[in-house]
Image (cartoon, rainbow, N blue to C red; front, top):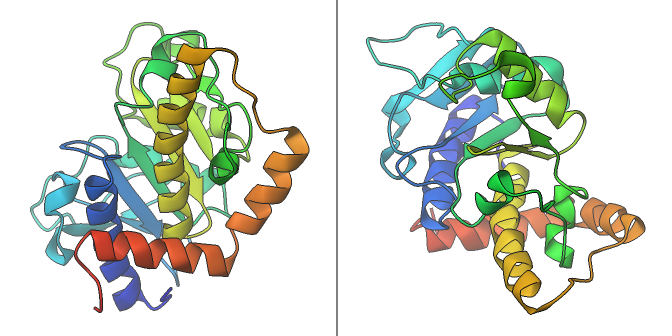
Length: 239
């Protein structure tokens, strides 16, 4: 995984395409990555569907969610969501916000999303649910200001994932391959857990299994393997 700025921005474009191809992102949703030399800055696309994102769409932001140079482009309304997670979590280098259809049922019913197979251990246990009404009452359901973004970051805590009540999910990790892994496995786990619940009571991973398996999967070799696979499926094989 490249860490120079040029290579990283290329990987950010690829991450958008991967998550669109894998059914995590659709016409909405977004991926962000922290600047490799400026931890107080990050990059995310302008307001554009992830399947269509190119290098020219990428904008640099401050951790207040303000574009450094908007270049006449319209940013995502929820760019501040990523900004405030980066501000709260120095360990986080990449974030995803999505509305994956397989995950959405767990945002509208009181059934916890929990790891049911080893690859989903990266979710870290029952995924917390953030409800904007607890602090803000009725809203437009977007995370488009600093107070709501800070509240969401607190709900995420030191974990890798959080659900947004009746809205979607946000994932965070130490690299673009890692956050793509978490996001895709959230989708896979939601699909599997829903099928298992239709059959009976699922057997969930234990706390120890979750911790030890996640530590292994978030290592360089598994992430390189998964990233290469998803990259090829998205049409970037051999590049």
